[in-house]
Amino acid sequence: MTFEEAIAAQPAWVVIWLYILLAGGFVLPFALLIWRQSRIPGIATILANLAAGFGVAWLYGQMGYVKLLGLPHILFWTPLVIYLATQIRRPDMPLWPRRIMIVVVAVLLISLAFDYTDVARYILGERTPMPGTLPQ
Image 1 (cartoon, rainbow, N blue to C red):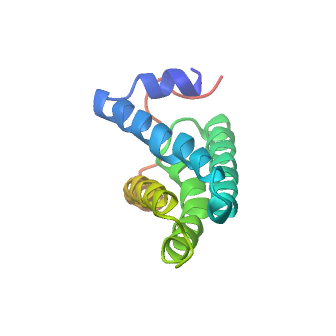
Image 2 (tube, helix red, strand yellow):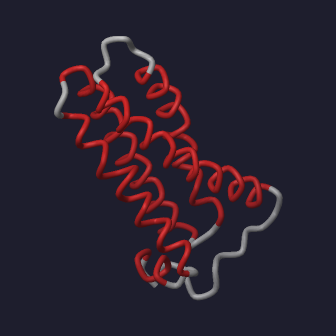
Image 3 (tube, rainbow, N blue to C red):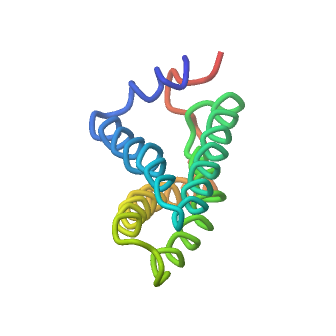
């Protein structure tokens, strides 16, 4: 089963959440490239998202759809959220990039809440892949 097929097999609310995550966490940061003051935070966000995405894809290829898939998000998004929070407070940051970063941070924090929970459950022994999602 491909990663996309495994995602499609999730409950509807998970699929809807992944679309929100895609829009708010992966697409919206490109708007930060418009303003000079927010270009570095925009690039940092895009790079962290690429690294997290590759990490999730690699883990899926190794282990299937397991709770540990949130680990790359934790590793890359936790420092990113802290960095973006400092950028939001910059006095020279224009209003719209600040608003965009607030939305991005909110979306990533919601996702991280799921990720920290899932990784903790994996560490505590819930390691069985979702049925039918082992990589081929």
